[in-house]
Image (cartoon, rainbow, N blue to C red; front, side, top):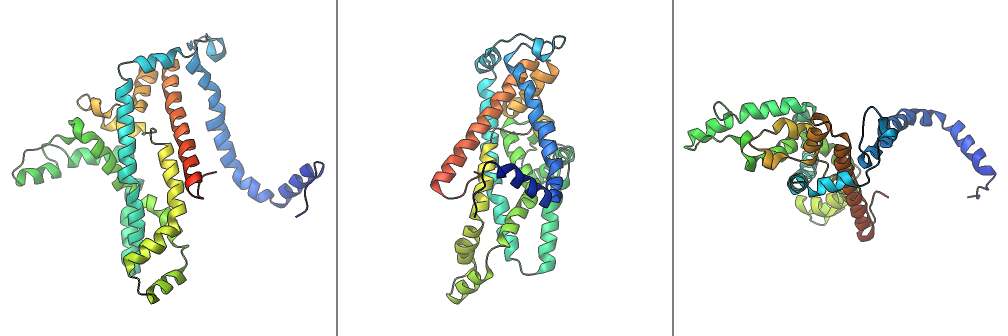
Length: 310
């Protein structure tokens, strides 16, 4: 390959653009989306280091350095927020991450096409439910008076349980409802990776007498391992990024000790309390921790194996 000189660089890029202009046109809306909604708003992060006053604007507000961060670290809620956010994130990772992989492996082994399509449709469908609908279903099914689950418990001789108000049940309900809703949709990428596994490897393994479980363990899993590692890195990188909407809808005064996370605290302090600089500092702290974890896990994955994000 001929080296591109300094003077030829711009000409080469111009020729590539003219040759593939349609591809660059397709990616333009995506670039515009990220620039407009993700990079330009970073300009406002400076209010985390200021006492923001709306009448003075961002530039006119006085700098206060790390005052808001220190206030958050010293607050009564700090350890509760970190503990709840981290526990929910780890719980979700441990339970929710392997389930789509197992589901994809099982669906891949099904030979009957009609049954396979039926299972895929049934498991994909919950993904399209809104969070509000999902929480509404949980409230109906888990109601202490008329919920189906409590009806079964009472028929078995037990006492009804107020699942939605008991702090010890919050994390389990949050995680398992998320697994039920997302496992089918999340398995799509693993099914796509499994379709790329060479069928000749399975044929050779059958000739050698390998059973189905051995072929799954020694052929299918290694075949999708790079995909698993990439998604694991992304999931660990967002382990403190517990979403706001679902937690907020499930949260009440009785389960707040177990359900209060960084996202809901930012909402209370920023939107309800109008403490914009303080809430920006808390949100920035959360994002920085997630970024550090993402970089660290990617570095470890690159050192241990050959698969990483970069």
